[in-house]
Image (cartoon, rainbow, N blue to C red; front, side, top):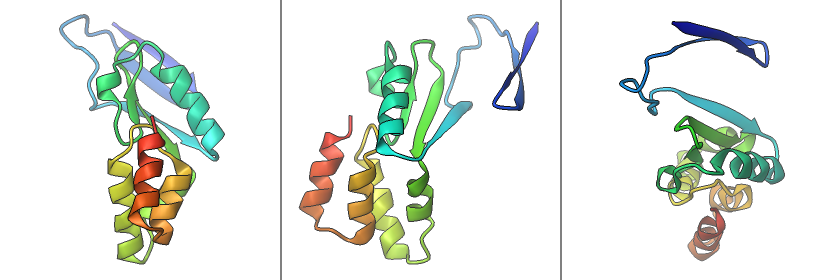
Length: 125
């Protein structure tokens, strides 16, 4: 048994595997966000009732066990920077976060001192 549905013009087919086929991180949905406000809104709505232990690096699980990646568009720019040091600083800052903090990622990318980046990382939920 399957169900077919469309989200934002993208077609999906999902099998009903029953309880022996739980959701895993093998499938996740990505929410691209332009601003911190969009990140905050998506995070708050999707994480409500979800597993807090599964929250890391912009990933979360919703109340149904579905994995989501809440990604500010700037993150892709920062971690693909032609300057490997800038990309690596951004990536390392991201690894310390639950909900991604766009300002802290920018500080890391720009080479702000480690204390400022750590403070921003702790503020990400």
